[in-house]
Length: 197
Image: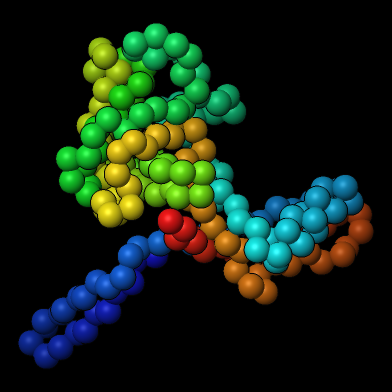
């Protein structure tokens, strides 16, 4: 969500003003759940209503598009060691440009891929990559991201994540729905990013 106010005026003029910090919203649903699966969602709802938070991510894009499929990210980092989708924020050029290290050589990132910058377990920032990029032979890549990283909160050191990149979210009050319809149950809820620092 990016808060904006657009005014259309005489003479075919349009003015748009952006305000506040952009934030993520999500809508999740699952159908044909067994009674056991429905019970797990019911317990999840109780935790969420008691102040619990979730690491919300795009279930359709859990990793970069070049590595889509059912297998989590894996391989070897250019500098050695196993790669599981975690990397290091090496430097911050500006709010929309970051340098990431600790990747496999030739690791490919496309426009629209997600990247998570994590300061602490509950202090995360989720972004979309806005330009194609490929890690060099040393496993370093410069990324252009949308929307800007909050430079007052996210300072070095930070980690970077490409496997299920997420932000911290809170279930929206009253959005959880789990009709009790045997033998299959359907569940849905919405959630909004929560800024913790």
